[in-house]
Length: 203
Image 1 (cartoon, rainbow, N blue to C red):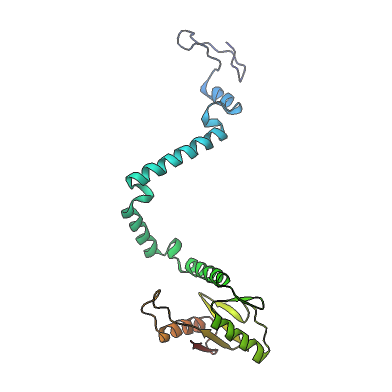
Image 2: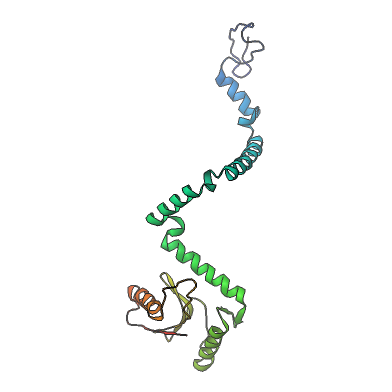
């Protein structure tokens, strides 16, 4: 008998292996791969089966509260991430998400004036006063919403003066005070080369 792939002659017992076409499993695998025979070698069929299997496992896990839906496992994973500062609990990632979220929130509120979005009508009024009184064009990242490490400062004026408009939000940070808010930002400035720069927080 001649192999369908390598064309070598081979012997086999027809009673034990009827309709045999390959001299070895290696040749059989090559032929199946080339002609995409069986799900294992057909990427399209693999994808379809994978999606079906994925949906089924989600339904089963959700029903039995296993895997992702096991609250105990999720709590342990979160505790581990918090302890090791992984993922969302990484301060750098939190900072990036916080800045992006703050920017989207400003845009959503709609307090827009001369190319900038403001967090509130009062912040917008302060920006207008600064611009008109000192003939300053506010530009985000330069003298408006200037980022220093993990914090974003509302206004940076005359290249030495940080002005922050802030109302303490007790709902998000019940222990926050005017003093603690100031000290956090003062500390960030001091650690990033702005120790001799002025910082004023108004509300």
